[in-house]
Image 1 (tube, helix red, strand yellow):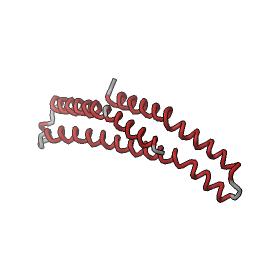
Image 2 (cartoon, helix red, strand yellow; image 1 turned 30 degrees about the vertical axis):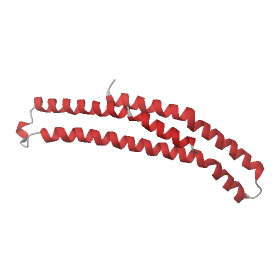
Image 3 (cartoon, one colour; image 1 turned 60 degrees about the vertical axis):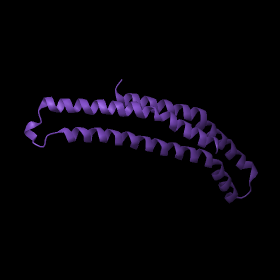
Image 4 (cartoon, one colour; image 1 turned 180 degrees about the horizontal axis):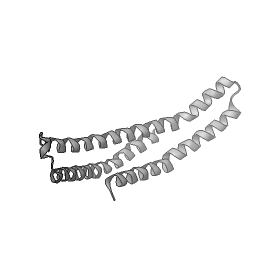
Length: 139
């Protein structure tokens, strides 16, 4: 499986677990809380306040997961950019020396480096999942 597909699959698997085990229960709790607002409050302002209060948990959890995924994506991008920079540093300044063989060699180095980036960062998904789980339990 190519690195992008492995990374995509690992990320989707983690998101699926987090959604099933944490996000959906939070949303369910918020919906039930919101339904209770219909019976508990008298004024429109109290109703809106009650609904907003009920939605805080899922909103915070979704924001946290988005931030974690954004940071993860940036980490992967930085690593891939470093791979490209290393290859670029090996290129001769004279374009006449950019032979197909050299370009293929450098592309192979980039591909290998990116594979290592994916492999090392897929492991960090466990840390993201643990941080998210710990934070959601506090909501």
